[in-house]
Length: 379
Image 1 (cartoon, one colour):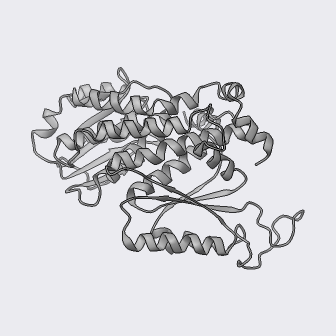
Image 2 (image 1 turned 135 degrees about the vertical axis):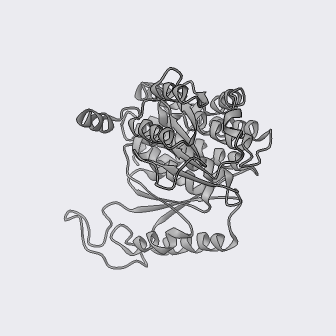
């Protein structure tokens, strides 16, 4: 990353000009989203969902920035959850989903065609249904026709900036249905952590003390391989990659340990990772020196406080193996005890970093032109 790019991130006036859609302000709204979503969900009657007891499974259907809410719910519920929690990113539900299951349809706009299709199928199959999205939307109308509860969400930005506004209602609903045990102070703890990290990453904090700006500068010009060390930080890794795609228009690879040690780790011996102890590689760039990677890998490890002991060993040795091959390694550690709090400690940092990376590279983080073009072509 050039000095000019670093200086660009420390010029507050330039940051505002380079971020015309206020993506940085949208990221900063995360704590408010948690509080508002928890309150809105608590005020929504879920008596109809609870009448038949605990569901056999919870199936969350959603796409993009809305769909990750299902992964958040599954990670927060953890491996001890008494029911299966799964996410569907498609037009159709799996064949096994039926009347014994709860389908939660999540769409920030309330008009996502895949989500509406799956929600309509849930109604036809006699599933219990919960809708989460914008009031007055097609999804809200579908829920009303099915006499299903609907938790309204007030968008404070683009769907990818609404992670907490869309995820917290699912956690509240699951807790009220007895699927998970969520302490009353969990939501405020997460909101406080989001505020703490947002203060560190704020636009007027200079790069040398701003962890998000530092991370953005480190990532630029590399191919990030992002590994979580638990199911919870695995969700954060997937979130990081998606935010890099949409905000930074930047490629990334997400994985989670231990699975990544059975496949992705082999890229350490490939053409993007040539280093002092690495293999001799082909010169993929005719203008560059033989063996030099065209774009170097960078390993990002998202550490959880609840790592399996053997995963902790895998993380440590993976970092050593990467360093032996000349691959730069960044470790980001979650903080806090409660799952939502630990997730919050990472997500705000990586959300800010993805926006800063776009701006450092001279890119407006807001537009998603390719997505809009695809929608227009298939309309």
